[in-house]
Length: 269
Image (cartoon, rainbow, N blue to C red; front, side, top):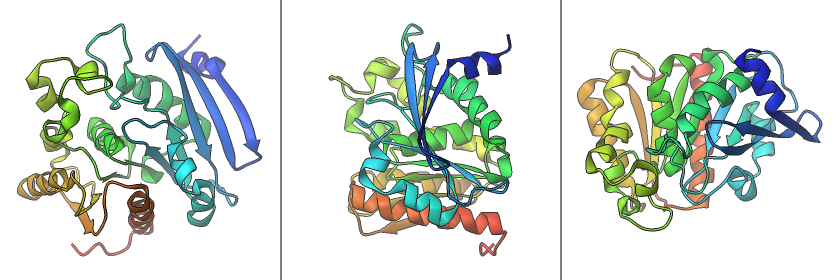
């Protein structure tokens, strides 16, 4: 039995609304538990429908985005299929240093992505990923892992440098629970220190943040490093805090950017 067969056997599918919203539950050997994924399919879905993986932030779950914004309406209006996986309260979309605990990154690449790729016939030219805060870091990290699987990516209020978050300090549901106590692991796992892997790829992406957000410093430093390395990217800094009103605004901007890429329109360079 191959891995796709195993994955499909492990998948439980509930149709909430025909051709619109689905809940997929994956029993994962890498997570040591189940992962719930909400999938929003546009009403006018067709073979050219693009797909967006949309990641939530710290202390959240797979229902966060749809609890705060009408993701089905956005899917219908923009014609994007939107996939919202569970990154868990403090998962950080990383592999835990303890192999007996959650290996989220491995789960994504060996279970979740192959399943969605097969189920929806995903192609890199029509596949995108973005997320907020912890999910902004996760989205960029996964994009850096394998840019050839995506057309583009984004980060909203992203914790793009893990050394700049107070969550790096010890405490319940903090980063040390995932990456351990070694200071060097913060640097190793930070998207800002892995961005060099995108040099020469010509894969423009978007990073955005409210300039009243604590994590705007992460966006500034990330952009500065990309400019130094000649990595094409678009930065959107606007009024806004670390809040759901801002993330609703930012999601619309990210989808607009992705649509511009899909249409092959002028990007100014």
